[in-house]
Image (cartoon, rainbow, N blue to C red; front, side, top):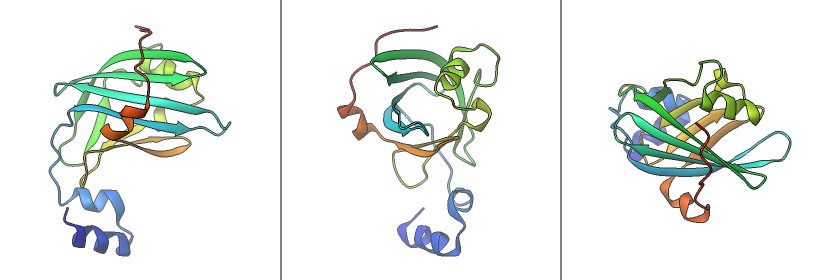
Length: 146
């Protein structure tokens, strides 16, 4: 979406859904990071490493713990939403990790941003923008929980 169109959509209050109508989203590639601020003032470092058009490695770092899940995803090229295969399955790695941090897995959504190389992670505590540039400030996560 061009800047003028983005500004017009923002002025009209149409936001992400309307900008999606003008975009065809391509699969993201690489590593995207950010910090999720929770309601109890805990900062959770999040890293999405997208390996190919269907595989993701999701890592979180909190209280000195490194947690890691492998997950399959699908990109809706019309809306930019990344849907994770096992997010809503009971006892899946990724669902358990969101629950560990008091996040309702049913409220978790991930979108590819139309106008930048970024992902928008939406949780029950609000949105977090994940970008490749934010990864340089986060330590590599290593503990694997499968």
